[in-house]
Length: 90
Figure 1 (tube, rainbow, N blue to C red):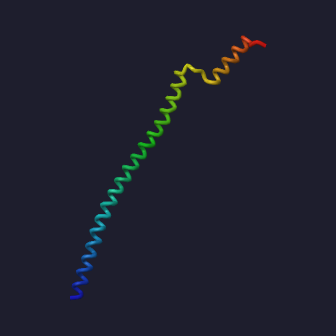
Figure 2 (cartoon, rainbow, N blue to C red; figure 1 turned 180 degrees about the vertical axis):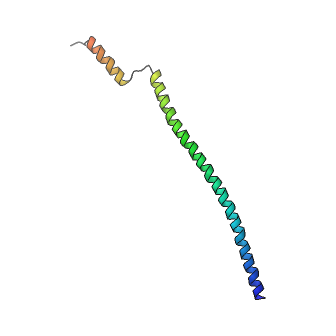
């Protein structure tokens, strides 16, 4: 009778581990799928960041092209030309 009880207990424990192993395999597959999704999202974010930097540079260039205010360097060059041709009082 004791042998039967031990066999039943061992059988039950073995069955429990078998069920846990089956669930673990399923979880591994799910985690692999999630890893692939996160890698894809990470790649998309990297592309967006790269595109954003490029876009910001383009906007900066367009602003400079469309601006009617001269840069400091351009102003200094123009000022020196004017000063050369029309010296101030002095």
